[in-house]
Every structure is written in C-alpha cells, then in structure tokens.
Image (spheres, rainbow, N blue to C red):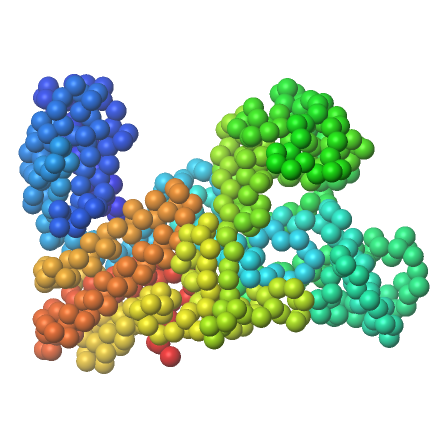
Length: 581
C-alpha cells in the first residue's frame, strides 16, 4: 500500500474525467504530475502540482484547472478538503479512516509493508569495498562496505534483482609487494632479522601469514631468489588476505554474492575482447594526449599511445589504455571488467568508490556507455572520509595495521549494529565524524540509540499489556477497532507511517540509503513524542485501564511503528533490540 501512489491515481482519474467532459484538452502528459507531502504540514496532508504542470500545455490558467480538479477530488470519500493555494497548487486533507487504514495495512503486511515492485525486471550490480588484497580492511573501507550493502538491500526491497560484488585487485604490482612483505615475515619466522624498506607492508597482521607460510613450505624458500618463490607466495598471500577480508566483512554483517578476480582478465583474452568491441565502434585510436593542465611534470613528454575516445561518451579527455611499451594501463582491465558486467546482462551498474577515486567517475561512466551502446546505466557513488574520535581526541592508529585504523577495531569498540547505523547518518559524499563515545551515548542526539529505544519501548508496551491480560498478538491487533484512534497526535504517527513506501522508492531511485536512517529517526521521534504526550494526557497512553479494546487500538499503532522500524533497520543491516541495556 502506497497511499501517495493511490492518491496520484485519484488525481489522474479526475484529470481524465475532466478531459472526457471537455474541461481539459486531450493528449496531456501526466508524467510530471506528483502527489507528495506539502512543505508545511499546516497546509494539509498531501499536495499536488497537477494544475501547475498542465497549465501551459493545456493553454489554461493554473487556478482554473486547480479549482475544477478540487471539485472532482472533494467528491472522493477519502478527501475531506481540497483547497487551492497560491497560483494553483492544490492541498488535500484526508479523512481519519484513511490514516487508520495505514496502520491496518502495516500490521497486515508486516515488514513487507513498503516493499515495492518498482525495480521488477531490472538487474542491478552493486560493486563495493573492492579493497586491494594487501591487508585487513580499514575504517575507510567500513563506510563503503556499509553504504554499498545498505544500498543493495534497499534496491532488493524496492524489487530489483541485486548482485553484490567485490572486485579483487590481484593483478597489479601491489600484490608482488605483498608477497615480498610476507616473505620477510616468513624469514622472520625462521629467526632471521629483517628490515621493511619503503614500499613494503610492515603491519603486524602479516606475522601469522609468514608463520603459516613456514608451516606449509618449511625452509624451502629461505635464501632463494624471487624467481623461486614469488608466484607461489603471491597466491598464498592473496588467499590469506582475502580470508582476512571475508572475516572482516562477516563481522560487519556483509556477504558478497560474487568475488571477481582482476587476475582472471589477464592472459584470457578478456581485455583484448573489450578493446576490440570499442575498436569496432570507432572508439579506439592511436594519438598523443595534450599535456596535463597546471604545472607539467618535468618527465612528461608527448608520446603516441592507444587511446579510448571517451569524450564521445561524456568524458573531459580521451584516456590511454595501452602504454607506449605495449603494457596495459590501469584503465584497460577496468574496461574489461565492466565489459564483463555488461555482458552478464545488468541493467544498472553501481560502483562504490572511495573519495580518492573521484577522477575515475567520468571515464568509467563513459566506458559503460560505450560498451553498452548507452543501454546500461552506470552510477558511481563516492564515500567521503571518516574521522575517528575517542575522549575528544583523534583515535590513534592501529599497531597491528601500522598505518590505519582497522574495521575490526571499530566493530570491536561499538559492535556492528552501531557501526552500520552511524555510517549512514550522513549522505555518502559528506565527511563523517565517528566519535566512539557519542555513538554509544543514550540520548536523543544519538540516532542509533533513539531509533532502537523507540523499538524497545514498543516491545515493553507489548510485554506490559500481555502481563495485564490484554491480547496483543498481531492477528488480534490487526482486527482491532482503529476508529478509536482519533487524536491528532496519533494520526500524525500514522501519517509518518504512510510515508514509508514512498520513502523507499525515492531512496532506491536516488541510490541514497541514508534517507532510510533519517526517516527512522523522524518516525522514532514521533513515537517518543506520542509517549511523552501520554504522560500529560491519560487518554493517549497505550494501555488504558479496564478498556482492552481501546488499548489494543493504541497498541496496534505502536506495533505498526515497530514493524516499520524493524523493516528499515533490516535494510540498513541493523538488528532491532527489544530491551535497552
């Protein structure tokens, strides 16, 4: 049940009736006709822009359309007031039984209330984290992991067929550096003193990997040149790091459907096939790029390279895909990887990158556009930096990691649920402060606590009602006489519940899961506000002494709030709590 969709349907039906009566010309496009909450709640329950968007194509004054439309809408039993405002906006007030019906729909649908068929038939690939397999995940990866995972869940909830994917960057030189670093720990495990030169990975997390390598091969590699051990240690180290990364993701509640190896693109013809596809479209040529803008590096020299004509698909400059020595650039395997995604039949490709990958946005969009002939949408989401604080001071670096704070450090401190929710309390492209003290604080200023407290409060009401002998199972609450909910404070909570299906579709369409976290905070605030009003007005308390029927109606409202909170937290990957500790 999406009440806003239903009311838009009523508006469209009314417009069609006006066309049939000759009050509007035929052939009007209703695509931009919207029904949404008014900017000021005092103006009504819903507002439509129909008269404003149709005035010009209808060659009529917007107020004339609005007044005729208002008369049609007012005839519907759901609409108590249809009022023209300003130049032609139309504000609607709905009857109390409409809002009571929302509560019934929530209880009847359970956590499926708000699910949408919007994405039905659309396949989406969400690639996120994709950290180099050279160490454990750090706090920067944490934000990308939470954002990508919540976005995937949101899209699934909105009806899309979603694949969660991790791209393993195991084809570049950084994996050779990993192998050499593990080899040093291997020698250390044999009692040798070693020195970590610049460019190697000195973190303590490689100590057990070196010991594991010793347990596997003994002293077979001691004193041997790289040609004897590099390939095997590279594979051994990559697997060990990916096992560690999978463990970190599991601790955060993240499970991938696909782990895709960059290495699988080399020597298999996949890169060549992708470049051949672009070449067949006239998008590959040999040429010389202009010097970089700003201060030109001293070692820069013009040289002919194989280039991708990415400017034909919205990029600022064409991009090199092969170096003058014949080696592929970093961009070439990225093109091949996305060619594979396009070939797998995805309608939308979403890449979640760190803030330092901003320069990749236009080139990757251009590549997907070219590879799919503009048929596949590519959205690249950047996650900004996370600043950690504890006791008012920046959180110190991890000794185990050597240079950064580990994902596991954060989860160990506050748990996966708090970590996930707080990572979504800001839009992905806005910086985020993560204060270990504040995210555990029990106050309204802590969104995690405030939302969980609302759910726990409802659970407490259910327990107390059951102890008082009032039946509060979902079947009984669904059948309750909701007409007893007639106070404006109660109906306001129902109004907020009615926004949930619309919010899901907006958040899914814009790829913004933080909207769910914001909505849950607002819904929790409404529930807490109603609770506090009950302290002043006995008639608003959820449990009414010696009146089981009225109690069940009021508890039905509270239970509906808990259901939607549970659904929203499920999208965010957070477990709702039944008691606060």
